Length: 389
Ligand code: HCA
Ligand code: CU
Image (cartoon, rainbow, N blue to C red; front, side, top):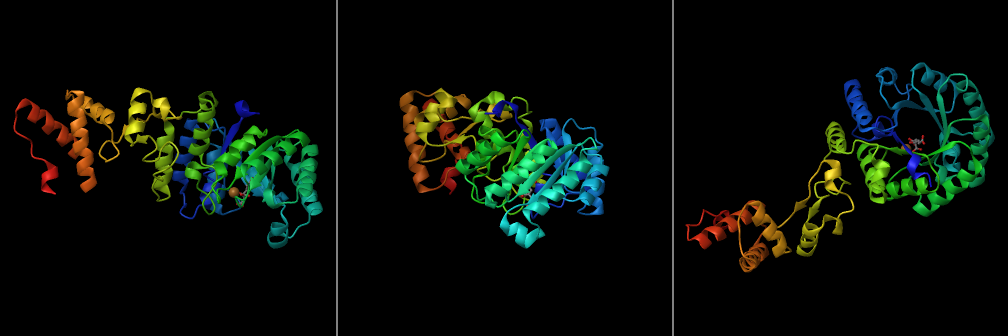
């Protein structure tokens, strides 16, 4: 298991640009690159300079920012693309070509032998250029394993740095990814990268299985944005690794995730999904009385991620019929209101009763608490939002 020595290849500025709503300007790309760099990702992958003149200028600009992260650009397996990639000044070139029968037939029309010949030509050139070299097989999961291992074996003999497995269509499950990467690990010397799409909800689990099987590099994008519904998300991978062992992600500036997710969400015109890993609206909210009681005693009862590690705080939701008196007492203490347990239990019954009638807000619950204290002290009630209805 190479979990301790993995690197993130952050592809928001390549795969992420393939998300339907992504139209990053040069300034926006620089902003994203700097945020990711400050977070501490090891690599930033950029759209091919062949895409458009502006794309080429943007790769050149970001390659010259002097980031800590190494810059990569992503190109097709041909000499012209490889030359143009090197000219941009990036640290590494990620070469990709489809190996499944679907892509060989309907995309580039090349046989496995022709793919191997092209790879020889491209890497013979790149080897003279002092750049990191990666070769990846698009649609690896639907490729014939015999073809895959033949191609990977050939590029490994050339002495490239990294081979990539790409689940381009999101069809793989963790067991299949584990098997494929384990087999590949036993066959090549090169580092192994995994790139997984999320069409069937397995992208994070697959990336994790890849690491367990010996992969050394994982592709991510912020919020998982990419073609269709995207790939392994940066925050999701971090959450998965943190839950295994917080030291695995100690190298990253975790509190920056919130700003990173918010920035990219805004730039592509979406909200952060409510159920997003770490930064989702409800990620650290506890509601049922039984959960709230235990979390108040010890957060690890229902939290495998510590909100404080990400600069966030947990929230105990009390304005519902599922609430419990421990949670209500906690809220009363926050408001500096002292009740006996019997009183708190009565107030809790009142909250439950009202919640059965309609949705309550936290403000309304606070008013109930304040009024209970006033009643206890013989003071007049404050005007209650509840009675207005
Ligand atoms: C794509 C290409 C790719 C490449 C992945 C890689 C994929 O189809 O847009 O270079 O490893 O998913 O296969 O993103
Ligand atoms: Cu992809």
